[in-house]
Length: 138
Image 1 (cartoon, rainbow, N blue to C red):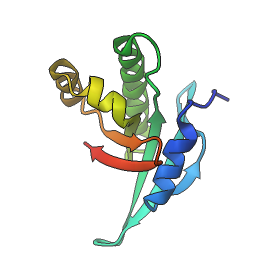
Image 2: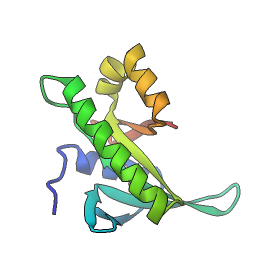
Image 3: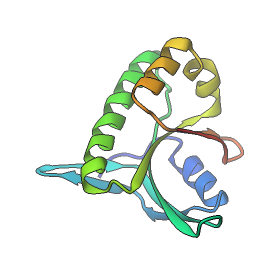
Image 4: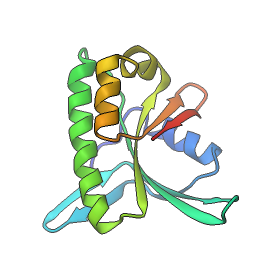
């Protein structure tokens, strides 16, 4: 079982506050002989169309001295999870959950935005102190 990210509980609580039901913590992703674990899976009924939305969330802290190195690692993990989910569970949307400070300080850089768009990285930006979701990006 993988170690929980330092912001795991804050992100989980933010999702619950936003009306999500946590269905797995952690969430196993299996493809062929490989088994990995994303941090959380959740579901929510969308009232407008009465459909259930399912998400898988990978949480990243970006606490090292090099946000770029953390980003490289997170992006690789995100792309692997996304590839496996597209085959095994295409109905689930993958998100990378990050704090609002790293979003403002690092993820707004033109080069990082380019990569996010190029690889269709969906984000959940969380106020980690208030444990509230600030923004969803797709």
